[in-house]
Length: 168
Image (cartoon, rainbow, N blue to C red; front, side, top):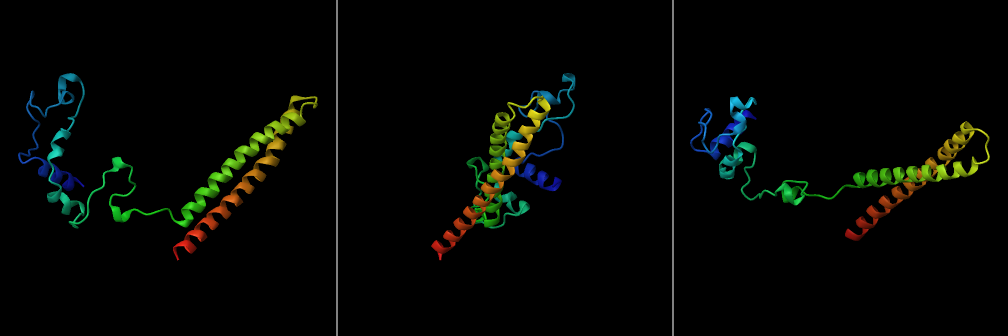
């Protein structure tokens, strides 16, 4: 990785040297000034704009001339067009089932809180009222979570089956 960095740096600048630039030089940094109290030099990243990617490509494994780089600023998850893909069946299944299960549990806890508060209104102590809320949450949350998780499992399976039959 150090040799790669040196190759990129040498490709960016023809007058490469290991020495720090003199003070007042456009590439010098206020952070490299020992009087400032900060140690270490901040590299001059403006010199990387002149890198010839064709010269560096073999060093980073890009030997195919037909490939074009896709910048990450466009939100692409993959570097090259041919590497893009859609989520697989397993990824959809886990995402849908997990998110629906967690939504169902959260909804069940909310319903359980209201149900427990309603049922515990007439109880004499705060411990009994708290116990009524906890029992209602423990009864409703798994039921809601499991039901929504099964619906998500059925949805993911039906979605993939319909895509398979449509593309056949």
